[in-house]
Image 1 (tube, one colour):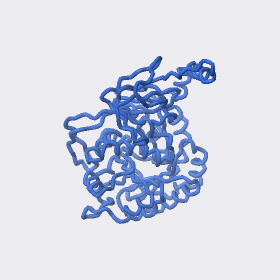
Image 2: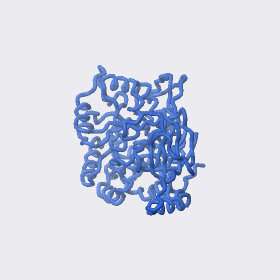
Image 3: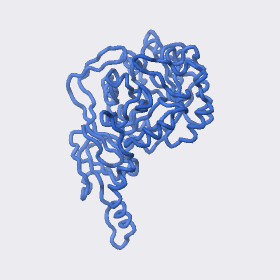
Image 4: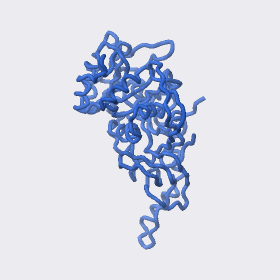
Length: 413
């Protein structure tokens, strides 16, 4: 049975109370000033932080739940010291598209278990809950979680409520469920954890409602001053019709999906509407999931210089055992497609933080939240499957080796 752990604050408060008092007294003691001790130091790892242009072997220190310093030869007196030689240390990974309303929806997975598996310190739930059931999501999942959970609120009243191996009802089929006023009120009252509005469009998600649910979501997000995340599956409507409606800062997820409704035409060329959307500031997110990433599409897009802005797993109960698996597996697929490692890391750290409007995340700048992911790249023979059961054998793959949450060593793999 999966257990939801205590909140971050509850865990950290008793552990660091005495150290906080000591630091405060030291800061105010001008007669005999002392250097503040660190709580945790990661030593000798390859630190890759695209937000600061860092890619070198050095140390990272944490204090009071935040990043305290990056540099060589940091004072480790009294600190928990972790030797991460041969490992990669990045800002805490952000998975921009997940479904972690575990126990509240049939597609939810446990966010803490997922964090341990994939070194993800911020899971962004994308529409599992709508305004009708968001309070339960917040109280029973988001608030008790030791790892950060943010959310795009679904414009549909009950979110994605019928998604399983046996039952699959597109929540956007029924326009009676489009809850504009309720979504506005719930999102406005929960701006600390709600980052935008989610809507799902396509033959499976919206059926005969077509593109109309997107127009309602647009009104809600505009009234809130928040971006949207828009799901697209098979036509109708077309990829072009959906992307044409998106504004700067809106996220198109499943952006490298296979035919039909791929971003490329039959000759493999990127559709003009896709290029125009990027030029005006639409964010292109992978959202791998069960059926939304194709090797063919990925190769064509990258060969033409169109890399995704953000890479996300769309992890849920029906794809966590394949083909998506988790975030590090999804990142590995883009490493295999030829994206430089720094760009792959950026797509799950600083780029995702910008999409969320949370610049304090996705970075190891001193003073930022003390989350970090410890990764490794292993050589070998690794089968990587897309959503059309096409398998590519990669000679290297990213693995999750450890997690730092709120400045403490939280888990090792």
